[in-house]
Length: 309
Image 1: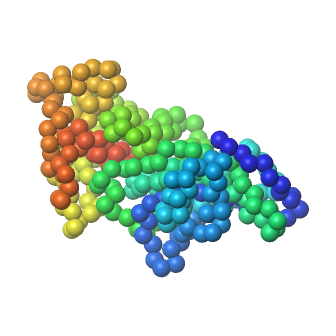
Image 2 (image 1 turned 180 degrees about the vertical axis):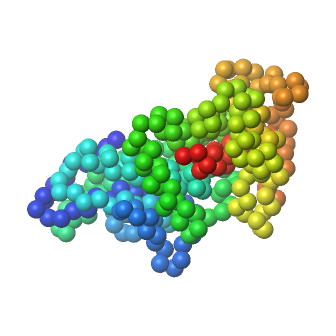
Image 3 (image 1 turned 90 degrees about the vertical axis):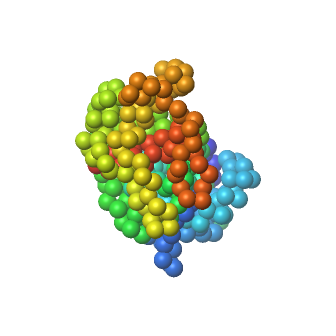
């Protein structure tokens, strides 16, 4: 975390902006949406772009800030530089970001930035930054924009996530943290491991059979693993919860225990071929079965979190 210590006049009213870029937002012409309690989705603005600095962002990251289009923003009043208050504002923004991701996984820039808005033209006052990894939720979620219906759902989910993070239920907190790490991890198989662990924290299950039973009881055996976000342009993939649950856990446990993926066994005792090609999205290159499981783990984790938090 980087702090830029610049003057701030405590006699003048100030607002701390905490923000991060979200890709693929689709809003009406005004381009803004109020999530409540200081949180909003705003289009990129000169004030946000004034936070670009080579002190903590490289040239590519600075250019991405211009191109991203929309930002999740948390505005909070501030009288003077307060590192504890600034960190709490970052935590609040990340809670809101995870609430959005639980409703609809969406790509982000990753880094969280802060800047002070004052009534003085004399100073450009920068706050700290937290350089997190960007989020890539996979092909299926990325086909659908983060639009008004999703943001309305997210506004309700924010209060739920805030309550969990302020509470003492460690399992629920861990479920959210693990899902966040799954979204941020660049290797899809490790992201799958983390997403399955997030679901386990919600379901309180053990082992592949227990995980399969818990997931099927919660979501339904014949429920499609991928939410129907993209019809009619892209038909909903046919894979069901029951069809994928056991093998999702086997992929997770084989990686976690450092075993040979070629020797992972399915329910029938035969080897699971993680490298066979699967039908997935029309006009897209066929993924391997492992890639399909990794994609499914993110979509399923969303629905488990929605159902249990």
